[in-house]
Image (tube, rainbow, N blue to C red; front, side, top):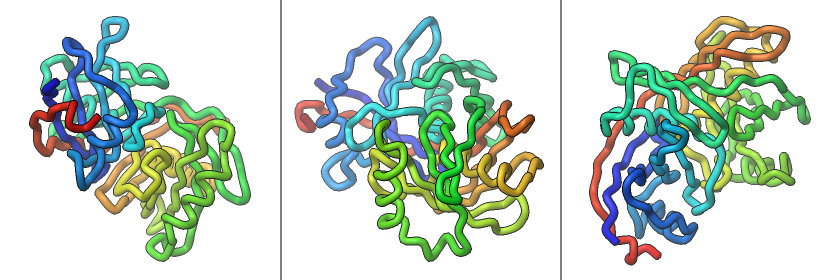
Length: 262
């Protein structure tokens, strides 16, 4: 079976995207894992399928380990950009993800704002924060994010927090100046540091706002792969009207024979 695909990235967080509205695509973990392999496949942090559900575009997201996962913020912006290319996106557009409905707005400069779910609970764990922004995130503040061994420290925390629900993503943040943070993220499912993480940037901005009582919006986050912005409203320690803004760039498109990757 020959399958057409597109490759996108959001601040270096990269995805294979396939339109499956008219053509079923095998979603076996081994196939997805092989497609995402950076040496023997196309190479990506994850794979996104464009489906249709309740009359709306539906985003299914798989990590590069082949398993279907929770919401991906950078992937959501790339999904919206892809839907626009396919001619099925208005401005703004609504689409569905595993965590519910999302709205995407297309900015004149090509960047995209994505509405995230509200955050009603912020949990303190060992002087750090555990927050669900569509995916589970552990956020810890450090003095020098560049000196953190993200692979080693991230792997240890990833396995020990939220253990009964698949573990957690881990974010290390450093304040550069008020409202501006450097961020590095260890992603579960990728089992490595990624160049950016949208739900992680969202969780980190909220953790920072909560800890420092910083209510100015947006908060800028400088990831290794680019800059993300998080907008929000805060009331009674709950966060609503949360938007994640950043790039969504098409890299290339092509075809692959699924039988070569099974």
